[in-house]
Amino acid sequence: MLKRLLFVVVFCWSGLAAAQDTILVYGDSLSAAYGISQQRGWVALLQERLRTKQLDYNVVNASISGETTSGGATRIHDTLARTEPDILILALGANDGLRGLPIGQMKRNLSRIIEAAQAAGAKVLLAGMHLPPNYGPRYGREFHQAFADLAEQHRTAYLPFLLEGMATQTALFQSDQMHPTAEAQPIILDTVWSGLAPLLRKN
Image 1 (cartoon, rainbow, N blue to C red):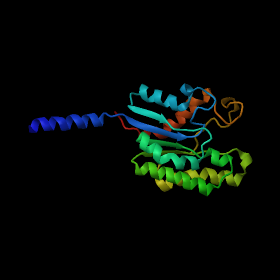
Image 2: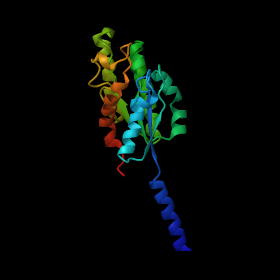
Image 3: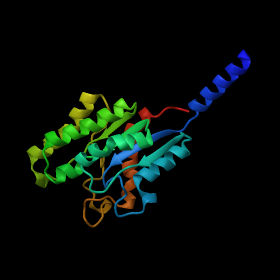
Image 4: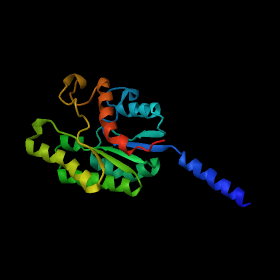
């Protein structure tokens, strides 16, 4: 009887150890493949890369075009309960900046999201953003610094700029000069991967 019980325990533990982990991408149109097919967006490309590298993760994209940090903070608990992520890639804030919303408000909302994710046991990768220069140097500096401050405060992994290496290349943006083209998606993926890779468990 004892041998049988031990077998059941070991079998169940092995099954749990082999369970697929989840990466939740929580962003706006930059992560929602706005204007291009979902299959060509960087989030879909991330799933492909994980599969190629034989890393057993399921990627869930909960990004919404036009989303602000306020909207993200409102729905975070339901989203966490539904997806139970092991890693959260948080890429919100761009729409707050483009609307000129108070930076303090944005930081409070992002803090709520980070704290909820950490309380649920998820690692967090926070992606920062820059604003176009026409928003003014002071607001632009404070906006960008907010992400670094939050990463330090909450001890999260941090990407200084989601669009690193491509922001000034107009050919990599759609006609609105705001949303990346399909050709830009692998560049975004490489940027995200640089921050994500250290958080991944090794099979």
